[in-house]
Each structure stands twice: as C-alpha cells, then as structure tokens.
Length: 221
Image (cartoon, rainbow, N blue to C red; front, side):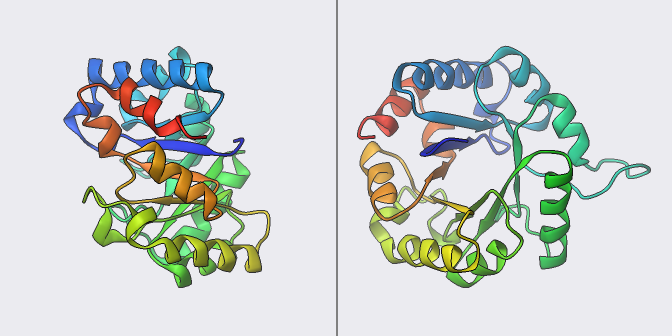
C-alpha cells in the first residue's frame, strides 16, 4: 500500500461487528477517497468477504495460519486471498506466535500474494522480524495498547529506533507503529519519526462517530 497507511484493527469488539462494522467501512472508504490517505481495515473474519466486495479500501485479515488441508478452525492464507484481502496481520500481541511460526506465516503470505504486517513489541523483535522481509513491521509497546496514551508521545524512541533497526536489516520493509494512537497529531508525529503509518483499533472502532475520528487522523497529513 502507498504510505502513509492508517490500518484499523476491528479486533473482536462488538462495535466491530454487523451493521457497526459496515458503518466503519463506509467511513473509511469516504475519508480515504476525500483525503487521498490510504485507510485499511482488518475486520473480524466473517466480515472479510463482504468487506472486500462492498468497500473500495484495502482489507486485511487479523491472522493467518501457514497450513492448508485437514486443519479445522485454522485460517489458511489462500482463503484470505480468495476472500479478496490484500494482506494480514501476523503475531499481534493478542495472537502471539513463535519465531518459526512468524517466518512460516510471512512465507505463506508471500506465496499467496498477500502483504504481511508483522506485529512486534520492541526494537529487538522488530529487527528480528525484518529478517523475514515482511511488507510491514508494526511495533506496539503492549503496555500502551488500548491505554489512550499514544506511543508517539510516550515512547517516541521506540519508533525512531525501530525504523533504524528495521532499515539496517531490510531497507524495503516498511514500519508502522501502534498503541494509543488517537489523533492527527499522533499520526503526524509517527510519520515525522520515520514511520510509514499507524496501526490502531479502539479509538476508531469504539468511537461514537468513526468518520469524525478518521478525519482527525488524516487531518495533518
């Protein structure tokens, strides 16, 4: 995706299901069209195909498994691709994987022509993930996730240092940051620190007016 990317993770929030999910999708599509800023979404799994059919925005899965065949309940990469998705999150802090599993999922994404967004929690893990050459590394200090305290303000060094570490290992890998992102100022600070965008969830998904929040997020870009 073109930079900067604002990627909204719906998680398993009730506000990210059914008609509420559709309202977020419509808001993302409208704000993306008006602003020219790429806004991607990672809906809940049952929403992937409808989102890909109904909204002209990049759609990501929240997780994939590097399997296919007789694996009940798993999410093979090829099914995500068949649904119309452009990529997937991998190793979110709420869906942690081993290093070997991360590598296998990145390879499965590549094989199925999907972007991979590998989530990490510090500079060292960001560098390790970059060695697998995913599309993105998304660094999120776990203590700030859902806190309302922006990583861009509370820990700008983790953004700056993660960007430097990732680029030393694999210059083509892009870097997102997340945790507590809630305003256009947060997004601008992240981009000024070298990030290619942000990964966020509750500030949009739980908002009374997701469109208003999205407009604020892109307002300084």
